[in-house]
Amino acid sequence: MDKPNIPQNPFDSFSYHEPLESPEEFAEPCILGVDEAGRGPVIGPMVYACAFCPLSYKDTLAKAGYNDSKQLTAATRSNLLDVVRADPHVSWAVTVMSARDISSGMLRPKTSAYNLNNQAHDVTIALIQQTLQRGVNIAEIYVDTVGPPASYQDKLSRRFPGIKITVAKKADSLYPIVSAASICAKVTRDECLVVHDESGNGSWGSGYPSDPRTVAWLKSSVDPLFGYSGQVRFSWSTVTDLLSAGRDVKWADDYDEEAKKKAKGVGRYFSNESKEEKEDRKKMKLEELSVSNLWYGKPGGKKDLWM
Image 1 (cartoon, rainbow, N blue to C red):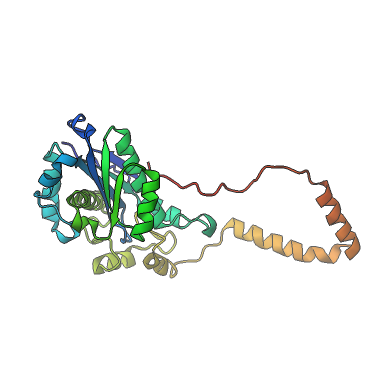
Image 2 (image 1 turned 60 degrees about the vertical axis):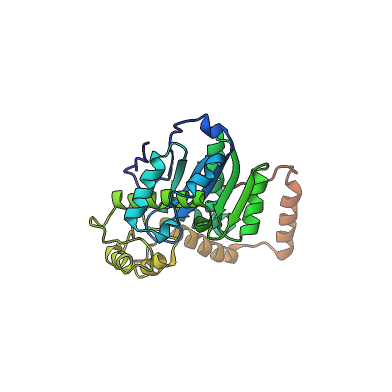
């Protein structure tokens, strides 16, 4: 079977679904597992993956030797992904969430901020929904938790009624189908870092802020004016601390706001209106307002979906 063709543009998120070799086999009840790779790094994407197989293949899958990808070497992970790709009874899909898209959501104004947990929940829901739309008969879902397991499980159960859903800590170590998804996610992220390597020789490390190579690369590569490219997560404190040492920038809007404040402050000295006249004028304006049943705020409750 084929594998994802990593786009040359590292700044946009994308999804990949492995073609179904035997669609009729996946029409029987199936199990599906979901896991991620790259939640904590300051460099590169976060990758969510799902793997699925017929329920009747569950015991055979347990003998394949899958495990939490973080406990395996890079070579072992790569070999196991080849096993997944060669197995006609197992299929998979990934969504690669770019660092730029992650940060643009997290750095919105506080009233509309799109935090990492919500992004993770939405991309998981989208992967499951896309798999269902491909005709896969999902009977059971196993998910490695993001946040409290109970509330996340309730959320998924409401979204996908009729499907048995299990959300658990360390699900990638407990359920082989989640372990398979973990391997797909981790190998895909590793490949993204190789294809989009800005250091040229892998010297930017794993992308984790605990990696000395990553920290050294961030310190040596920061531009005092522009900072970094979109492959670095600007919403991470590691980056904001380094950027704080850069050059301050004054934008045109900043000057406009200052001018408005000054004009407003000076204007009060040129008004001949009495206090009573000002109150009457305000009252007249309020009385002249037309009544409308329209609300001009932003609708609440609607979430972004990664499709």
